Amino acid sequence: MIEELGDRACQAGTSWAQTTFEERVDRLGRLRNLIIEEMDAIAGCLNTVTGKTPVEAVMTEIIPTVENLRYLEKNLARVLSPEKRPTPFSYRHSSSHVERHPWGWVLILSPWNFPFQLSLVPMATALAAGNAVILKPSELSTEVGKMIESLFHRAGFPKEAVVLAPGDGLVGQQLIDEKPDLIFLTGGVETGKKVMAAAATHLIPVVLELGGKDPMIVFDDAPFDRTVEAAVYGAFANAGQVCVATERLYVQEGVHDRFVAALVARTKALRIGTTMDDDMGALTNPRQADIINGHIDDALQKGAQLRTERWTKGPLMSPVVLTKTNHTMAVMTEETFGPILPVMSFKTEEEAIALANDSKFGLNASVWTRDLARGRRVASRLAAGNCVVNDVLKNIGNPHMPFGGIKQSGFGRYHGPEGLRAFTYEKSVMVNQGSASRELNWFPYSRAVYENLRVYLHMSFLKKPLLAKLKGLWGFMRAFRQSQKKANL
Image 1: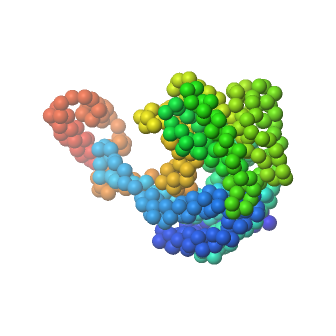
Image 2: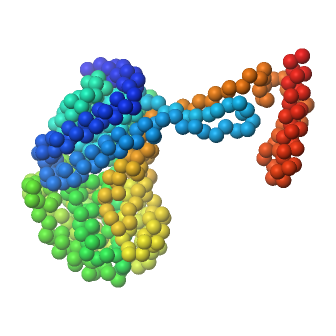
Image 3: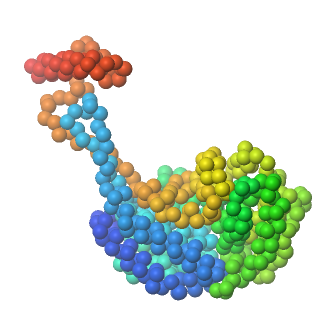
């Protein structure tokens, strides 16, 4: 079965690559319309499968998806069309350009936390670039995968070019052994290591979008109420099951106590449940509760203070705020992927930067201050693939901007032109339109050729007045023509 999927995807990739940009844009537009028309059904499915609220399903899954589809429609041809490049003077009569070609077929390995957006967007991007795709969703979100496959097929994408392969990690391993041309994974660090190791046996390129431990830095002059609201949303959106969730909060000491008091009050006011009127939804993966509780217990044993209630009711878990935390605690160093917000204070800008960068992860970060010059300065010094000043989470949804991490948060980018090009390989093409019988670098060699090269180096690369360079150029070309005549005798 798996072997058949690989063979079909390989053949489909060859045929789909022959479609025009216009044909792909047409199907992307149909897909976008279908998603909007079926918003209620999609949100309902996500509510059932993941436990996120319907409002959150629309805001975090559907809207970012259609934004990315619209970006692809508008920018596909511009980003992937051949690009002219300069050609050195010594390559006379030649022109150069770069073409971008689809890899062939792409294996998309998607997670359970945002099973719609984090499946459909890379799939659509790969297809827009001319690839066929096989989607292997998390075994926790197979029903979402089925819905996505149906949407693509009804939008006019060939069934052979968009294939669903549900199953567990063993299915993923078997698909890798079918030697896809590119693997795109969104998942945890350990899964990323396994996928990369399996891909390495076949020398398959990979894009890894992995986890994070994202810091939020709050300076004394930050807009107070807005920043409190942002901290609550950044930590507890999707019950904290977000790779770019705010998992570390650093507050400058001058405002720390007041900020924590407001943060705790706002957190306690959150409505927990899975209905239309709830704020924070359920845990999607029951196994995640063990990690979350382990991080809380470790922090409390090491001196942290619990500032909120702590309870679990089935898949629902209370949002937790911890203070008096430090970097000896797992809650400040390991990805929690749950509704916990640990808080630390800092004194200076330098200390805040050092604390934020003291992590093996480097995915996203946010900086909060009314001084925008300071905000930009701090953002540029944070070791992260993405950063936002005076906002949280939303920056990763900008379809014009590349998204991806550094360090153990992975490598490679998607979204924006960089993401579209990631699903292609570059081919450099140079065309010589001259008619000379030989080129400057061709045989035969001689002392005269050697001296001509000396003149060329002096003329082209040595700092000297323009007139002297022009004289050298004339001498070089005259000597070359003479040597060429001799070679033709």
